[in-house]
Image (cartoon, rainbow, N blue to C red; front, side, top):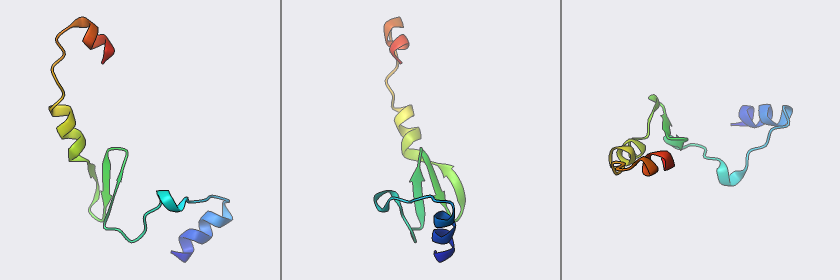
Length: 64
């Protein structure tokens, strides 16, 4: 952790405490799950797409 913070400090980068997670087994970011097993898709996002209602008009399609 010290090495990570040192590199951030040297490069004048800052991590907001509210947006940071350390020592957790997995992190969800932009529709992906990052863990020790690698990067995978967030299945909640896939489920939301599957359950999306079918568009029944041209106007609805354009809005989509």
